[in-house]
Image (cartoon, rainbow, N blue to C red; front, side, top):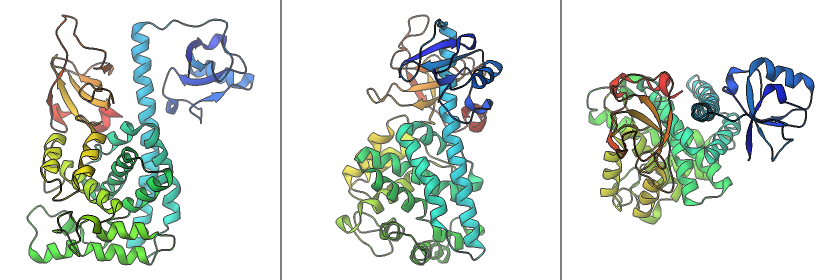
Length: 393
């Protein structure tokens, strides 16, 4: 893509509009990128925008271009990030809506309509392939009140990211995604009193929790269109590498790759999430625990690939810089994992910015006083009263 900034005064038919001067969701345009085919489209753009960005490799060029100022360039970068998050959030919400309808239907005695979930889930899988960090960020945003549904969707997102890291094919990743989306479906039979209990569970309640595996397998086995791998994931995702899992005590090669991935992302998301009975742990603390228990809970190679996939600072991690600024990680740098791209939420005085500038720590190495810039602290979720929904999206 070769983008050029053009005033709406110089638009003409045959140009390919790749980006606007505002998020797509704030306009009447249905598609994020299109070819100008008529005068009516030009008039619409002129009413809603001052300038747009055109891709001169996919359409005609202009007679005159705008030279963006440094501030405009930074703002346009913010808008591009916002646009990416908007699309990801929209796809996520559609999947969450479909999933909620499916689960509510099961609770009312109906059957699982897996085909209604598959299409929207495949859209999310494709989105993760293009913008993994945007979707990984979404796994951090939901609160503890809707933990069960959000947990299954988030685990599916994490599994897709890991599947890509492992080099799985498109069909394999889609199969993995639906299996993990449904792996805890048996928990729909549990009462909310048990799922939201703040005290320790007694022995009877522990057995009721464990029974969700058999309930999941039974429900999925009766559902048309469910693959054997989906049933296998539900059946074995609590088995462990050393044989100390349940329900069968399977070990090592007796546990499929998909079921092992399910168990790993299930543990990670549960440990990093805030729930009614437990505060979410920091990413680094969870990674350390997983690594210490490699070849005990999960195979060493799988744990290492997962850590590599998420990096030191996954999208959604709140960090404090050496400048005193508070940021959220929005994109990893694959070249140098310790220098991610961040959005600055609070200035050095811990006050909110008028807008949220983007810093690429790979290229922005020093502050205005020539002091090195680095990440010095990983912060708790919602540190300084930051509202994830408000600031990130």
